[in-house]
Structure formats: C-alpha cells, structure tokens
Length: 365
Image 1 (spheres, rainbow, N blue to C red):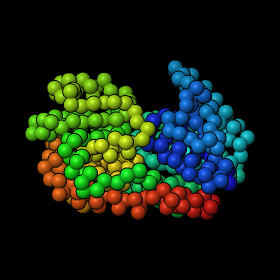
Image 2 (image 1 turned 90 degrees about the vertical axis):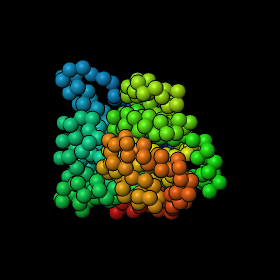
Image 3 (image 1 turned 135 degrees about the horizontal axis):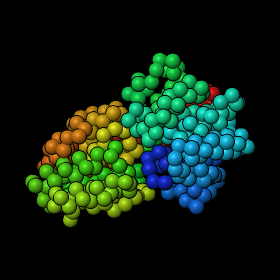
Image 4 (image 1 turned 180 degrees about the vertical axis):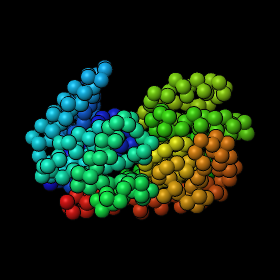
C-alpha cells in the first residue's frame, strides 16, 4: 500500500511530530510512504524521518504580495501539487492543516485516489486564512473520510458529514522512562515548571507568565521553562521584564525530544486558549508527571479527570493557574496520585492501538 502524508511544512510543531511518527511507524511495517510538503527543499525535517520514507518538498510556500500575486501562487500550488500527486499515485492521501487539506482535496476530486482530511486542531479558532477555511468547509463533503482528534470537535461538524467521521486520538510513543514516587519527590525538589509549544497567542503563555509571577510571590525559588519558538517571543520576554521574573523564566527554543525535559521537571502546564489534542500533554502524562491544563476547546477535558489524573483550570485565568501551582507545589501526595493515574494513558493511546485505528479507516476505503 502506498500512503502519502501531506503537510505544509516539516518544521517544529505538534502536527509535524505526528506526521513523522506515522510515517516512521508505517514504513517499518513495509508500507510505501511518501511525505509531501510545500516547504523549501533546503529545509530539513525538524523531526527525523526513517531513511525509507520518501520525503518530497515542493517549494511552494514563497510569499507573494498583493491580491493578484496570491491568486497566482494559489493557482501554481494547485497545478503543481495535483500533477505531483497523480505522478506518485498513492492509494490514499492523508492531509493535515489548512492549505494542505485544500490542495489534497483539489488534487483528488474525481480521481481514484482516496483522500482523508486529518483535522488536528480547533477548526473554528485555528484559522490562519478565513477564506480558505470557508472553501475547505465546502470541500469537506467531497473528501472520502474525516479523522478528528476529539469527540468534541466531531460534534461541531454538520450532520451530513457525520457518517464519514472517525475520532482518533494522537498516539503516545513508548516513554523512555516513567517516574515513580521517589522520582516525583525528587522532581518537586527541583522546583521547575515546564511547558512545550509554539510561542503563539493560542498557547496562552502570556497568561502563564502572569500566573507564574503570582505563584513566585509565595514560591520564589521555583523556575519556569517554556520550550518552543514563535512570533510572540519578544512579547513574552518583555512581559517577563515587566514582572521582574526574567531570571526565573527561560525560553530556550525548540526541542525535538520533550521527554528529555519532562523527566527533569516538577510540573507540566498547558495554558492554551484552544487546542486539538496536545501531543506534549499526552507525553507528560505518559511518563507520570502531575499536569495542569486549561479547560480549552477542545481536548484536555476528554483525557483529564479533575484531581484524578490532572488539574483543570479555566482559560485566560492567571490566578487559577497560580492557585493550581501552589496546590501541587505544597502537596507531594497529590502529585504522586495524579502522576500514577496519568500514566494509565499509555494503555489507551499506545502507538500500536492508535495506528491500528488508522489502518482500519484506510482499509475501509
């Protein structure tokens, strides 16, 4: 079977990480795997791809100014992508993120190639191009199948699409190590809060920094590490300066293997304004970390039961996050309980189980 995974870029990000995981898993099973991107050919994939994965960057992301320039770029993207897809002739194409979804559907409509749309975020809030999103909403009726990350996202889609929707959670790779009670206690003594994700408005790091400022007034010996890159770096650094906590808040940049830092941290925080199903939250839970997550749409509430395997707080609420941090910092027993229960997510979301669900969808087509 030949499977094409189509994504705009192969940089650092949750969607890109999932694509690399899927590609590497399937190629090891003997499938013919192609990863197609619109990226510049000079940009190497941030996450490692197996040597047998055929990676093809089309170099179609060049910026164009003006309405006419953008129209010409879109036409070029449609023609080039459609031509290449039909040259490769995959049995199925799985497309993720707005422009890749659009190009995949325009490349496979009225063809024998099966198209699966993989929506991995909140499709109503994660809009980089509102006009493109409207076009995609129309084109969804022509796709062969829709794979969504949470039940909550599925409920937002119209009734005429429900028959072609499957909900498949993100897979969790086998953790290299799991924290036990002694590890949790040792990590609490390290007094380090960690989060991982793009430095973008969606992730709510401005709220988290304000929360850490409140928390640090009672726990001045703790630190915060925010791993990732993005457009809000300078804004976040300025906020740290204003709050006088720059010496305790680190923004080290991108990270390929979150487990390296998660295993050295005391608490993981997801402060997002909206999400799909965040990979790094699942990874933090899989190793047994106590986690705090916002009740954002969508995702965290489907996998976290409050005070059983994590703590849930409202979005945009710095005080609530600060209070939750105080609770965990002062209660090792609760941290142990949350961590032990969080690890059970490995049984539900193990990569073998999740990829089997994907194969069921593909075989049904």
